[in-house]
Image (tube, rainbow, N blue to C red; front, side):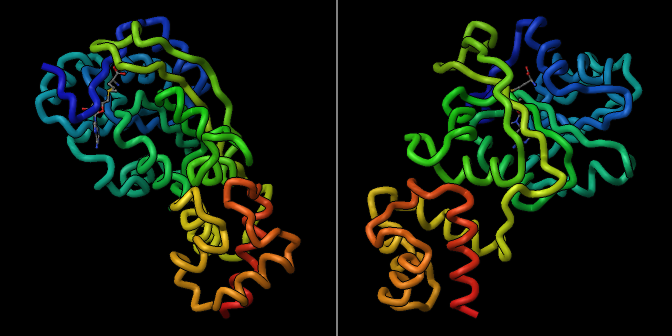
Length: 270
Ligand code: SAM
């Protein structure tokens, strides 16, 4: 019955459902976007507290079940579509103009990174994101320079948000049980960036480049994959002018460092 390829691990612990809604701080002022309502267990808890809930579910077999489990609520809209092909801004803002938008979901794990990256890098107008993810992914979101989980996801999350790990959830709370532990994490989107790069496209381009080939030096990554039209000498010069060793690797740079490097490279390539 469960569709493995849709990442279907349904929550069967009602206590956890309430706690997710608590962590998201959902109130009657809020409009909630739920990704993957499944059979509607979390959706009901959210609808009890929120002004409105828009739930996007890819699996058409679940739509008649959702119609039954959610029949008593008049503030839920279920859309049968793929969240990765959905114009998120259009669906949440159409009816809910100035209300705070909260994303709350027990995410299908295979799309965690693309959905979070989409929400952040395209600056969807959401106020917070409270999601169940694999524990290891939650750790990646919070990792800093030198940590083994530090990477492009850590930087995207911390550039746009304050991240808070809410709780660890064991496999026994799901049906079927996933192989690894999960975690609920809340990302509060910052009204203003703590660090700002002049050209964010350049920033995320070099971040992806730097972590694309972890074992290589940042200089080699930028030279081989950067497409910046600069010679190796010119790139080395930019690095040393910012006080970096030529042999430094991307994993040693903080977000501030990447922002400085991005600014210097945008200036040099203009
Ligand atoms: N919310 C339910 C719960 O907590 O019990 C189900 C969570 S289950 C981990 C993930 C849900 O996301 C499944 O219902 C699955 O069919 C749905 N899903 C998977 N890929 C999706 C996609 N690309 N777009 C929308 N929903 C998707």
